Length: 170
Image (tube, rainbow, N blue to C red; front, top):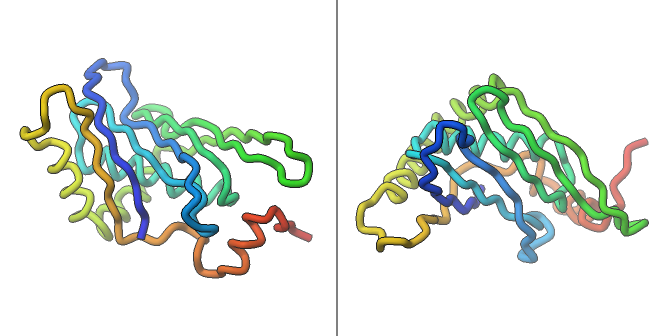
């Protein structure tokens, strides 16, 4: 299961991005040391949420460090652009890497997500669009999608090695 916090910002500006994806620290387990937070801008759709979740999943594939904190902006012309940062366990130095995921890749992954977990995505959008939210309240929901995190959890020993900073390639 992929757990995501989805927030809605009512900024309707034409220059606003489709969404923003951030990962925030979580101390719950070695397999999921960060949690994903998706902020949708304007009127949300199942497709915009699927694009944001696709950006999160694709960023996790590119930047395989489980302790990396990611910050991505998703736009209709540039895809997902942002960065990832993590602390090097041997030196204590903060490492930063740029991330760029093309829109075509995001659209392909989003289509797969809608095929696999479309019902949960549409339910989340319906919840965000409900009119019963108290005036002035921030619209945010925690959702679980029936999608596995990429390359994570299949090997608990690998997850512990990565969390300990002992992963390396020969």
